[in-house]
Image (cartoon, rainbow, N blue to C red; front, side, top):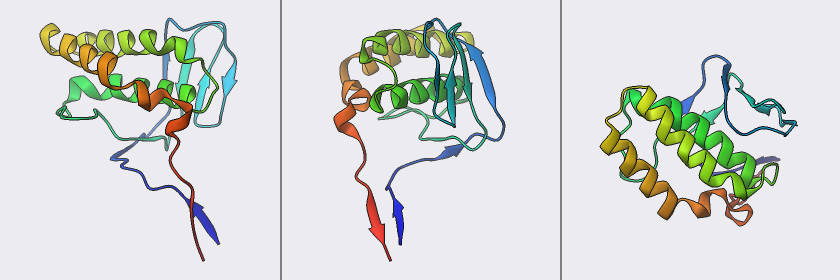
Amino acid sequence: MIKYKKGGYKYRLAEDYRVRIPITGHSIDIGVIRLTKTGWLTIRKGYAWDGPSGPAIDTNNFMRGSLVHDALYQLMRQGWLSVLYRKAADQLLRDMCIEDGMWRIRAAWVYWAVRNFAARAADKEHQREILTAP
């Protein structure tokens, strides 16, 4: 028997990605995501994410931010990181998009959208159902 979850993953990381983020004081390692006390976030090769969500367009200047944002929301959803860090994750998404060349007005819209519509994605109750098959 196998156990699996249905999910809309579009992208898979081809190599490890490491970045310093402003969320510090935690030592978390769940295999595919690692966050050190000094704020180093490592997302390991093979990590799958769905890219920008909602009516957003998957552009190059959105991909890195969506990767980090999805990983941080996963840590919140699984209870490894408090949802009190949601605003910091949303701000980081906006900042990374701007750093990667997104127009500030679009990045502001992205930030507004995640602040107003993404709370459920960070909620522990939003876990995908585990399905089974013979």
